[in-house]
Length: 182
Image 1 (cartoon, rainbow, N blue to C red):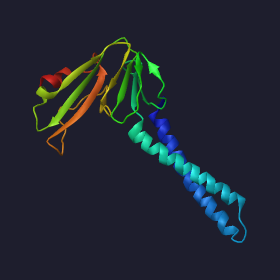
Image 2 (cartoon, one colour):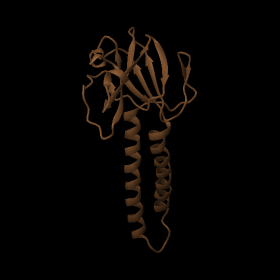
Image 3 (cartoon, rainbow, N blue to C red):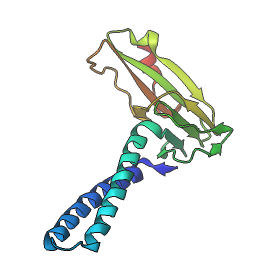
Image 4 (cartoon, one colour):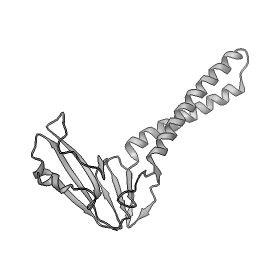
């Protein structure tokens, strides 16, 4: 697994390398218009390879690599992207997909996942809660968690009639139950 920030840094580095390579290739080609320039050809191959990597990484980052949240404690949460499809942990074999998230609970506390419905509906009837036991890992059909161990707002403006958000955190760290009651 690799952190989300490292993937974004890699994508930005490839993008800037591509731009720099295009600049150097054009300047080398302008200097020697009569004969082929080996350095310009090398930059051309470099540009093609960095462009191919960008075209593979960006869609994979958005649509293929699932999110992995690792709760080491209630205050230390790591966000990863799964790249290795052969990894197994706590009895779960990981799959690819854009609407999949994995939660690995390495704490001694239970985690709770709450589906929050905002909009023109009665919130108390539609909010659902799931519990993840301590020291386990589970797979969820959730693209991303909107609130990770944060205070959840009681009201959010939505453009549509209803919008779903997901909260995840330790049972003891947040009073999510007050939102479910109101």
